[in-house]
Length: 288
Ligand SMILES: Nc1ncnc2c1ncn2[C@@H]1O[C@H](COP(=O)(O)OP(=O)(O)OP(=O)(O)O)[C@@H](O)[C@H]1O
Ligand SMILES: [Mg+2]
Image 1 (cartoon, rainbow, N blue to C red):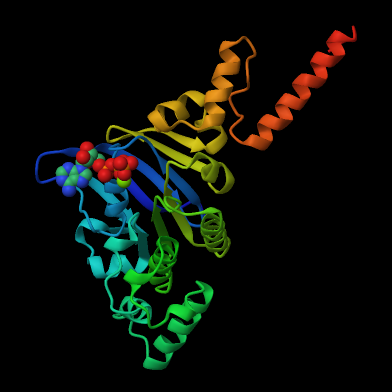
Image 2 (image 1 turned 180 degrees about the vertical axis):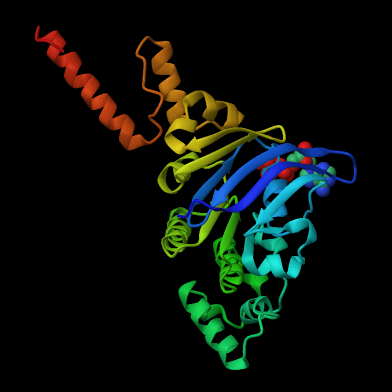
């Protein structure tokens, strides 16, 4: 990681044509090789923010720089080579007649030879375990397979910055493991990965830094273990707070103050096993 930011967002405002002010003055830096999470409640402005990174949306006020290019006066075709965005709903991203054509189309305009394109298609289908569906319509894939194809069609272009909007929604355990692996491999090879997510367990596992948004603004930015507390999680996830956080809250209300940094079942198991050991010592008259 170098100390010169790769993405610099300065006092960014974005107003939709209907007058909705989705971003109200966002400033942040993202560095090469980082894995950064963007979290916050529905409507906080997360998706709007990431759409400025490849120039899909241009600032109403303020600036966004990607590798020293001011996106307001850089061609979207140039930015889309640098920044790949995998959107939440693959149905809206996929459109070709076959899986192979989906990848082929994505490789257009990269000035590759026919041989290089064929090679890249084969390599991509292999990495994403989609070879057997080469001639199938993307619409006849399962939800998890569609997601894999959507990720493949972005990654085959080899962007330096990869942005995922809600990558784990609708994925089973193996789908999530695959996405985690892709993210970790990319970061290790020096790519920058930005992930919009509500998935707390996933975040704790793969994302070291979180930018927390609320109502079109950044309200916190820092290491995951510092940003996530039970209160922020409950606030962010509102109705769908994880069972474990509810459980911790209930224990706290019963008088047993559970530390704020317990988010995973294995952490809770360890905490409770210590707790019961101490209780048993106390009962036997020993010191806790
Ligand atoms: N095309 C649009 N036209 C007008 N307003 C929009 C449009 N897209 C989003 N908005 C509004 O902008 C605000 C931010 O939306 P955005 O989609 O960026 O939120 P988000 O943080 O990604 O939410 P979620 O977690 O639900 O995906 C919301 O108030 C939303 O209603
Ligand atoms: Mg969104």
